[in-house]
Image 1 (cartoon, one colour):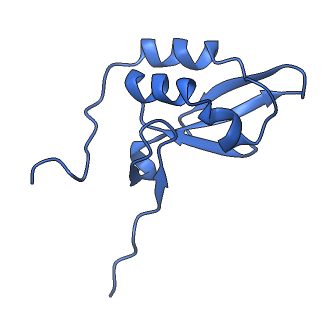
Image 2 (cartoon, helix red, strand yellow):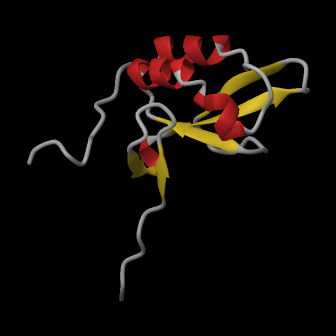
Length: 102
């Protein structure tokens, strides 16, 4: 029996591909005037999602590049306070990169 490939997603911060299970899903909550970013670790919230390594460095890159607005297709700059708070409360997880160890 053939094995099925794991779904891969691209991190909006570092732009590296990784299995979806290693990335944190982020959704935009709110109306057009007031949009905020929310973490979706269970991957169950409705709507379009963006994926990111649960790493403050990837978060900083995504904010600097304004990647959340493009990935989630929202106009303006979404409020990232709840997402930043979530990332600071989480213990750091090792990020495995495919180019390491070669």
